[in-house]
Image 1: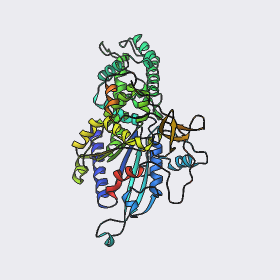
Image 2: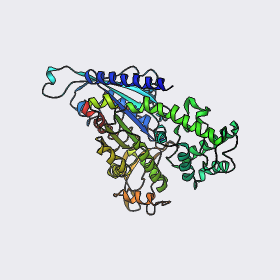
Image 3: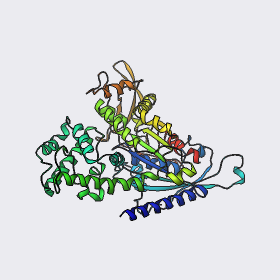
Image 4: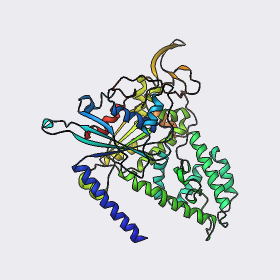
Length: 471
C-alpha cells in the first residue's frame, strides 16, 4: 500500500507538471472555484456569470469586453470526464422562463469550461493573432470545504470540540440525550451506531436551519452516493474512558479516520488543490437577520473556510514543484438587490470586517483579495416611499411565497461594522437598537435584448477582478 501511494503521488506530480507546461506555453487555463455556505447563491452566480460572459452587453467594467477585445465566447466539452458538468442550460432556462424560478442549490461538485478568444492588448497587438483562454469554473458546496479542517484533528479532538459547542443548543437535545445513554466502551452494535449517526445528522440539519454554520462533517448534510455507508455512520462521543477492541468508541474512531482519508483528502487532492482563483459567496444579510449568534458563527466558519486555502502567487516554477496556490480570492456578499444602492457600501464594509483576519494572512502570503456586494441576478427595482413622516429607500419585487408585489425596507445597516460584530463576539442574543429584516424575492420575468445577459449588480466588476489580468 505504501508503494502504491508513493507511485500514485509521483504520477500526479508528473501530470501536474505536464498540465502546467501546456497551460503556460499554449492555451492558458484559469480554474475558478466557487463556494459558499447553504443558500448563498452559488448556482445563480455561476449561471449568470457564464451567461454574461457569453453575451457581454451588461459587462462595462470587464475591460476586455468594453474594449471589444473578446471576439468570441463559447462553451467547451467538459474537461474532466469524472466530474459532473454544471447544468448551465437548465439553470438559465429556469431563470429566464416566462414564469422564472430559482434553480436548485448545489449538492455536489460540478464543473464547466468556457473558452474566450481574446485579441491581445498593447502596442504589438496588431502583430499577433488572438489567443484562446479557457475558464474552468468549479462549483462545490461550502460544507465540504469546512471538512478540510478535519484533516488536522483526530477523533478525540473533534468530538470534544463538537460536544462542547452543542452543549447549550436546543437543536441538539435529542442527540445529547442519546449520547448520555450510550456507553462508548460497549461492544459495537450496528443499530446503535446508525442511531447515533442519524441523530447527529438530524442535529446538523436543524442547526443549519437555525442559522449555525459550523455544521461538519459536510457530507452528513449532502451525502450524495455515500448515503448509508459506514464512512458516514459515526458521531462524536466522549473519549475520556477506555476504548477496548471491537467497542463502539473504537469503531467510531476508525470510521472518522476513514472519512478523512477516503472522502476529505481525495476532494482536496483531486479538486480543491488545483484551484488558482476562488470566489467565496456569503449571505451576510441572512445572517444579520438571524441575529448576533448567527453573525459570530458565520465569522468563525469563514475563518475555517479561508484557513483551508493556500494563498500566494502562481509563479511558473512554484506551480511545477509546489502545486497551485490560490492567487486571487473574492469575498462577495450576495443579494445586494435586497438593499437600496445607498447601503451597498455598508454591506461591503461588513463583509470586509467579517473576513479581516483571513484576508490579512492571504495578503501577507501574496494573494490578492477583494470584497464587494453583488447580486448575480437582480430581482428588484429601487424606489423611495414616505412612511410616518420619513422618506425611506426601498426595493420592490415579487414575494417568493405569495407571488405578490411588495415594497421592502430591511432596516439601516450601521456605518461602522463593529456595531454588529462587537455584540456578536460578546455573545449578545439580539440586536439592541435595530431589527434587520430579510425578504425572499422571486426572480423577475426578463426581456433580454440581443447581446445582453441577465441583469445583475457588480458581476462585471467581479469578473474583472477574477479574469481581467488574463484577458
